[in-house]
Length: 217
Image 1: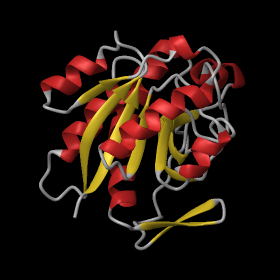
Image 2: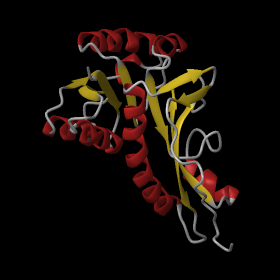
Image 3: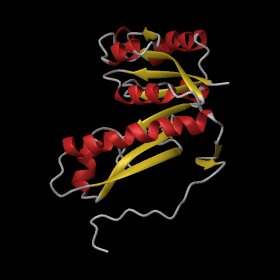
Image 4: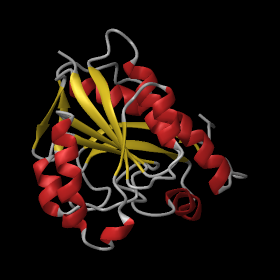
């Protein structure tokens, strides 16, 4: 049985599209049963509809800072679609601790940095100001603290001296599109488990690979 997944978006839905494409494979262990946006003008809604995915709009603006009020509408929508797993794809709305606990271990997010470094806003700018030589993206479980949940998967790129936040963002986006579907596949197939705050895997890939930047040795 394929696990039923909802993707929550607020904008263009770039990672959403990568997840939808991956889920088209017959052997993918999850199916995207809904794309939910808190903004009616989110470009991702058109992309989802074009792929035949049901879309739902729950405008968050009328709720203001009333997170619980918004979630009181969101949760029944998830239940109606019999959603088992949630993937956040650029969803620009914070949740209450109660909602997060309800979905603990079943809600994924992706952040364009190698967490726990550079959480929150402007991660590419943070990375450049810190002078790191490697950056990347992280898929993690959602907990009440921002960008702090157990890490499921990471991918990295080298950082060049002439990189800007925009150029670095574009290269990392390619990594995001590769690791998010794979992280969902692992979760949906039951190949990962949580031990406290650490993700463990039923089978492990080759761990001998290295990435050195700048490449001088």
